Length: 104
Image (cartoon, rainbow, N blue to C red; front, side, top):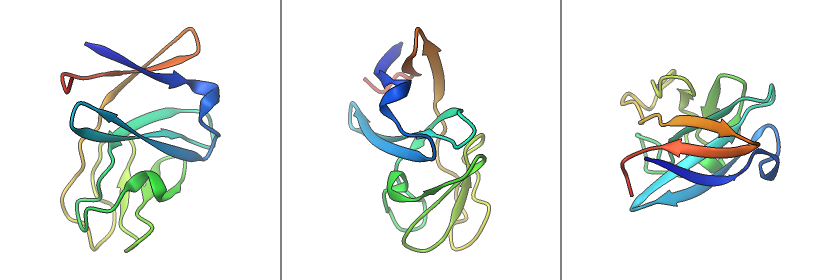
């Protein structure tokens, strides 16, 4: 099931927003090069909101302890995180962002 989040234009390039689908917080990331990515909005190291972190074209960095995660796989790319975060499928349709999920 796909859940509409917002319009692509609602998220500034190089930033992220936090949304809730069911009980799960998800970070929606608009990379500087224009891609839209989605992953669980919780650093696996310290339960910090990743949507408040620093966005790159391929990673998001937790603002609290500096752990970086791959936007494609959710894999941790630096310590102190060693557990991945879940990645969610993004669908762009008519300029809107949808997340394919069964979290609702």
